[in-house]
Image: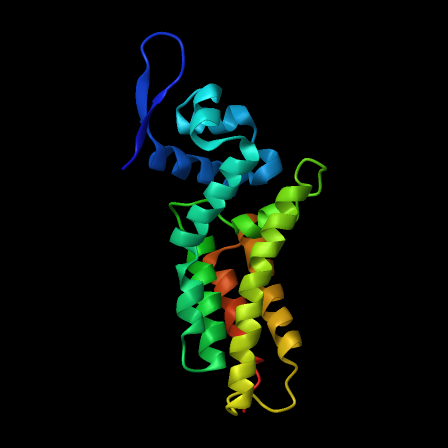
Length: 202
């Protein structure tokens, strides 16, 4: 576990880079890129602003590192979903994984990617584009998985794979927004059940 000496008045103190980054992730996850101030970040990370710059770079670079951590630790269910044997199981695993991620009692609710992709200020535009580009690669993998399912007869021949993927994304993003607004796990469970009841069968 890497540690660095924090810069500041008096005797320097060490801090754990991994713990500081995890704390920054929680701030971004709770408040979004725009809503997270440098004061919020340094207070949560327990370091000074010079120490933050020295260890992580500027706010944008810190967010990118936090997003990497988020994808490694919180979105592992996406890769697991793509490995499911049927398109229906892929979709359900994605929805159930999102539910667990978005309603965890120990983490902020909602989705970091959704929160940051809807940011609209000039300062956040580059971050918004970055988050959307990350999402596009995941979406491409899902389209390819559903195309494979269609070719294997697991999805009906008439199904528009792009449209089906957009539908699934709309549900996932809607869940994130609702979770962030305080929707209960039971509410989101019903949404998943309704969505899966409309899933096309071969």
